[in-house]
Length: 282
Image (cartoon, rainbow, N blue to C red; front, top):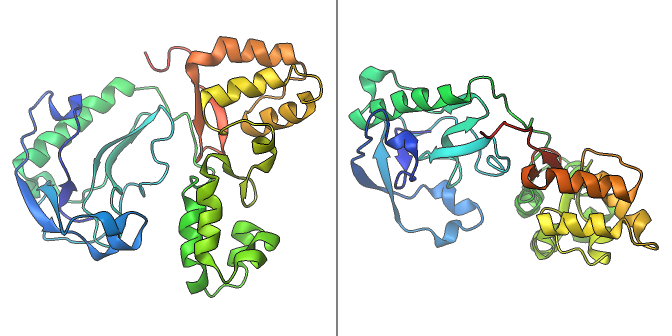
């Protein structure tokens, strides 16, 4: 990551207290690397940035790639960084549980005034999460990943890459058609999940459930668990997408009713519905 944060600061207390962050904006050429990723062809020729530090550094690591970083309630992107070599939106500064993830490299002596204030504010902000460790540990990539991997698979020399990512049968079907494979996952985006490989959940789709990650879809599965004739399929899918293994429809219903306001779905956390502990978000 280079010297700058990207775009206008979000409306967030970390830019307001204890010090007001007043960035000075510049227009920088959009990195060529941004064009290589989905949506990159739609970006403008120049991007608004503000300097956090002054090292003339134009490359380096990031806190996280943009994909799936904040798909749980304990993570948030505080600012994307300007990243030559990465994708648009890669995380420059973020929070995961009680961890502040600061992606810039310079000491305060080489920070801008806005950068110094932002740094101090981030330390001030993270203190409020003392003792609230991360809810989710990364177990894989988010559902955009098979689309990205499909688009580059013909450029990867490892002969096991395709079967290892998509399974032998699907890879054989699309090995010479990366656009077709990307479309396969894009068309059923709400049914994508991963166990040992990336898959589209045709079982869930056959039940008429519209997604594996919306609360209404989970509620429908819980209802189907009480429907004789579809209960076995619903039970199987509830176990796939939750960390629970209740054996009766009544138990599933009680769990959903009691947890409804604290449920969240995480791709990177294993394509599972999980429950925020009581009091965690207070």
